[in-house]
Structures are given as C-alpha cells and as structure tokens.
Length: 112
Length: 113
Image (cartoon, each protein chain N blue to C red):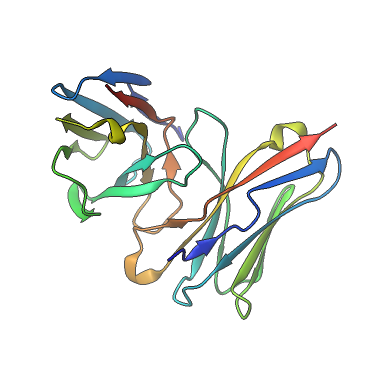
C-alpha cells in the first residue's frame, strides 16, 4: 500500500468558519508533511512531523494548526482563514526525513 | 532566491521521441535530487531520485543524469508516451535539513501524436 489519502477532496469555507483537513497513510512512514500549492507554483512546505512530533514550522500563520494524533494520521485545523489562503493543500509522508516523499491527492480549499 | 530552477516552463515532444527536462541548482550543499510528476487535480507522484555520489540513475524509460560541477541535472524519458503529458518538478535536499525538499517551478511536458 503506497497510498496517502486526504479528506475532503474539496472544501469551501467562510472566513469565520473552523474546519479540519485530514491525512492518513499506512506505509509505516515516520515523517509526515503539509504543503500548500497555489496555481502554477511548486508546493511550499508548511509543517513537518517526525515521529509524531512537530519538527519544522515554516513560519506558518497561527490560523493553521497542525496535529499528529498518531503515526498514521495528520490533521490541519483551519480557523479564521483569509481568501488568499485558497489553494491546494497537500499531505505527504516519507519513511524517514530526507527519503522520497509520497503525496496525497490534496484538498482543494476555497475561502470565501 | 530560487535554489532550484527549471528554466523551461513548457516543452512539447512528439510521441516516441526522447523528452529531456532540465534543472539547475545553486546550493552546493544539496546532495539528493528527485523528480516528481503531477497531473491536474492530483498530488505529485515520485518518479526517480539520485544521490550526489552518482551521476546517473535509470528506472525503465526514465533516466536522471547529474552533473555536480555544473550544478545541473536532467530527466530523460524515452520513448515518450501520451501518458507522460504532465507537469514535472525537480526537487533537491541536503543532509542538514533532510526533511525539506526544495521544488523547482515545474516544466509542463506535452506529448503530441
């Protein structure tokens, strides 16, 4: 099983809403990542979890709050987002830090 | 400052011919390089990687070449097939920040009949 799953596929939320994005992998990978990708741009790293602990936060605004409940799950909690936060949010996992990262299909987020 | 550069935003190749995608980098500390393929509305898919101790890595129709002195790598796809039409991202990482991979801006490859 080399699959990373993400839910939901699409999300539309208002600026006052609270929502969560979910990511799951069952490959036994110990590193998990959140990326943000805008149209015609490369993915930008947001957070890295290694062995369920946050190891990298790329100066992401606090309206994005990651959580790693266990080694297979990664959540991204969203609150008070801005329209410019609309993007494709990608989750990835890797065997360990620095190994090839496997990406999920992404959640297309629109903030109205 | 772009540490990983893909200077060709798009490339069109005839089916059956060789596709060559190029990538340049500026950080001499990078020691691991990857190529990803991305279809619209999907996440990137890992294709092939190469360590800085090698100058070539081959996997089926895909071959990556690394020229460390020129800080240049390329991905060769031969023969090119219609399903290869996608955006290709070059990426790089270094041992000191092993969790971070820096992506290039991507090259859109179109395979024409």
